[in-house]
Amino acid sequence: MSRATRLIRKLDKALALHKSFGDDPEAFVDEILEALDQDVATIQSKDKPIHWAEIYVERDRALIKQQVLNRIMQKSSE
Image 1 (tube, rainbow, N blue to C red):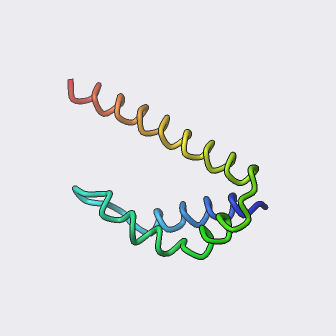
Image 2: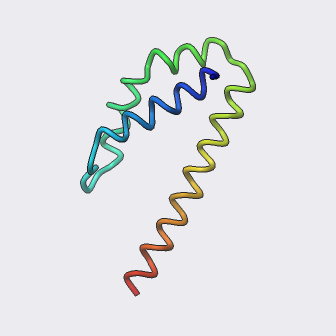
């Protein structure tokens, strides 16, 4: 398992600890990033393109998921 995969799994676990993020989900970013600090530092210090590629793909998945969920929510309010 790559370092990027481990980081993504830890991120998912950190997010799963919260049942709700209230009205300001961005308020949790610093807290969660701090919990991942050591893993992030390791990836940044290694600076392997394969790790960054995996992180970019995961980010794109999250953006697509957000758009799909937004559209589902939009249709339910119509």
